[in-house]
Length: 354
Image (cartoon, rainbow, N blue to C red):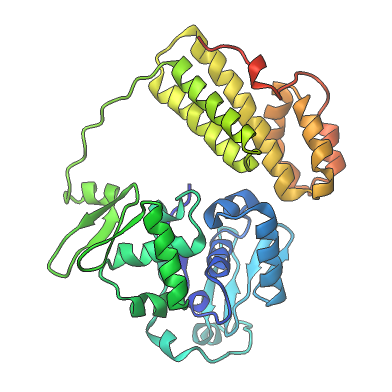
């Protein structure tokens, strides 16, 4: 899970940069060593899409890489890199500190009044929502009565583009029109009305400040079999439709593991189901690791190796995944990690949790 993401003014006013590129730069500025799967979730793009986006940023001179750290470079500013994350220093501040900076460039006239832009955690962690959608939701979460002109000034997009983004958000049930503006429907955010029109705030903060009363939580109880059957039906449906991205399969399986842990009573089958689903989650982790980090020409060979891997091998690989990444694992290293053992390909062979 991400905390809120701050998009510095210097990134927000970048000319000829798309919203996805601006959000990517903000994420890399905050977490220089962030892994590709986490960036892909924020931007809601594929591994190939992320690689293409990074190439565009590199060609524009906005993003470079040193070892496993991403360095953001903004004209007229200097990026201060620190072990715990970096930040953008404006040109004037960098002169005072006598730091090396890129040559200053003039900013668009409307950018003078803009400040840093914050995307709340509840919005940045939405699954399947594009970068542009998260920007628009954040604008209306902060100011539900914002006019099109105000939104366009902040996002620097076209009116036709803004209308298209809003239609997608409305169709997804994340945004509705009101008599005075727009209402955001995001889990974890609540609307607090006031004389100025009101705004959205974190539900946790609202409860802490006494602005709303914490809801009574009623523990949901479901059988292990019911949860497992629901997961299996979803996997089979995706298989019929041609499959899903490995990171989607991993996150979905992790969600069903959490459901069993939170909702299912203790039974002998509970441990069996958890063990099996954890192995599947580790399998999907290895798949998404290969998809994000290794050439596509090796994917079929690595997929075959994973299908014959043991549960212990998959668990060990997940434990060492970040270490292998930092060591710049080659396709051969990954293939050598696995041997032939249990076939995990067919859900029909899985143990019944009943």
